Figure 1 (cartoon, helix red, strand yellow):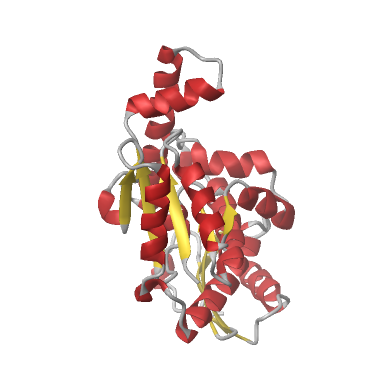
Figure 2 (tube, one colour):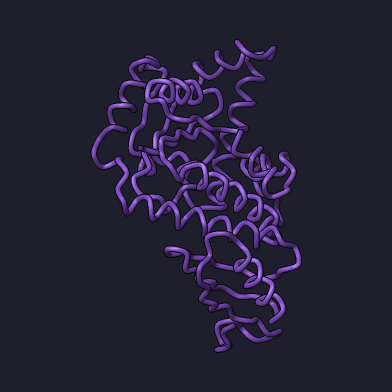
Length: 277
């Protein structure tokens, strides 16, 4: 019941590998579909979700909450899809979006520039120079975005369990390699794994609905443990705290709420306020 994430550069062959592995193992294979589902469930434009994962942050990006809201929606949808295992996700930064989930098999697919140029020009009417510029631009934006959001280097091989160069390893052999690793004992689900997945699915869903509520200001942190939800972080007012608790209380799967939110007073650091709501 493994969960496999495929991280790849543009036109590196990662999607083809993901689809072949899914066919051999009988797993579901997801990519952009996660964006579409997230857009539908949380009422966010599909284009905005796509931009949140692919476009580099602007100069004043750190002043906005918009992208974090969109990413919360994507993470919530992906965690819901991953609850039952047997999933391959080949979208952008899957191994980072699924952080906290145990025993995810993280695969990185690479290929040299000639391989990628050929793949791009075979599918699109572009020149060789245009293909090179496009591939470089997409890689640079992914590197900058993952560094900005996760403080990680997307290209760092230490972030992955398996790195495969499709320029040198045939697709069929790469598929066999990943399938073999996925069947190893350490990537099989356990009872604790299922509980962890249920908790993450609930906490990420609650985070998404709070983040998507524009009437609430603050930085909210959600943890779930068997239906017991702990709400932490800082809000701007008591009414914000009340709205957060109401949203959480009305969601399916929530059995109990521990509220540890702090209210930020103007001119006073949040950590200096002892009040808990």
